[in-house]
Figure 1 (cartoon, rainbow, N blue to C red):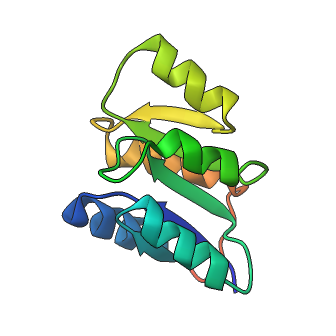
Figure 2 (figure 1 turned 180 degrees about the vertical axis):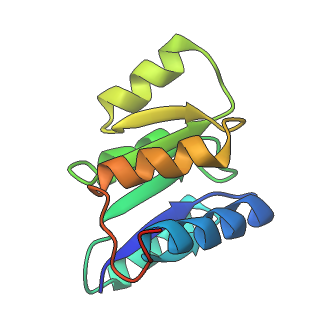
Length: 126
């Protein structure tokens, strides 16, 4: 089963993103609100996700550490910190793209679509 991992502590944003990504890519998602919860998800998963969206500003730990664990997996990192240092750290840790959390959902979804190669499993192309 192909799936997306969404790690974001803001419930409404995370759930809305999951619905929009399902509609646009046809991929289901597994959602998490913390690094600890994400560790359990990854340890229990039979297959790796095809892509991850990771909030770097999580309540329990720094999302940069999670990026290290996800190295080799396409990742869109989200942050509310606009500093170049923070973005550079995320890219060095393995993020393919770093976007500000205030970007439109369209920009975030487009970034995910590019990383998964425009994969469409169930979604209509129109």
